Amino acid sequence: MAKDTANTTTDVKPINQWVADALTFSGLSQSDLATRLADRQVITSKDRSFVNKMVLGKRKVSADEAAAISEITGYPPLESKRRDPRLAEIIQIYQSLPENFREMYAQQVRAVANAARTQEHPAGHQATPGAKAR
Image 1 (cartoon, rainbow, N blue to C red):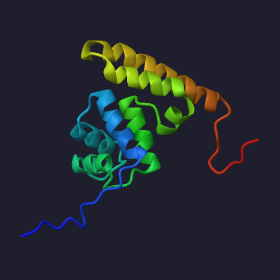
Image 2: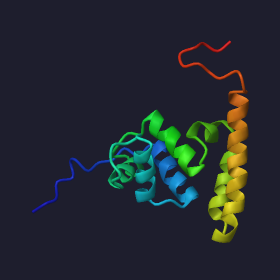
Image 3: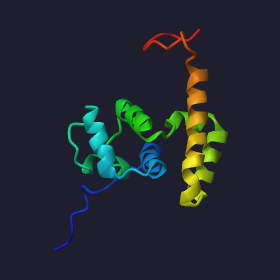
């Protein structure tokens, strides 16, 4: 009997690759991430299949989920990678490093991401959802 592949197609987008990269960067398993997302009430189940489907493009990743994944993993948001080519280069270097050097480099990546966020939203000037930029 032939396998039905009609419902198994995926639409992998940059956000899905970003989730996979965040997992690699943090060293968390899909189960660990699912548990932490569920603990924050971002997803409804601690089942790793939620995260697996995000990685495979079988499930959309909401903005709230992406923000929580960034906070949990320490991996910079996708938009930060697009805006700052230096950050993308740091991540590429990180992924090529031996395991024993990755944590030190991860700290640098987090510092760059935090600096980028600070520049986007300086203290006292937080963006208001729906507000127009001046």
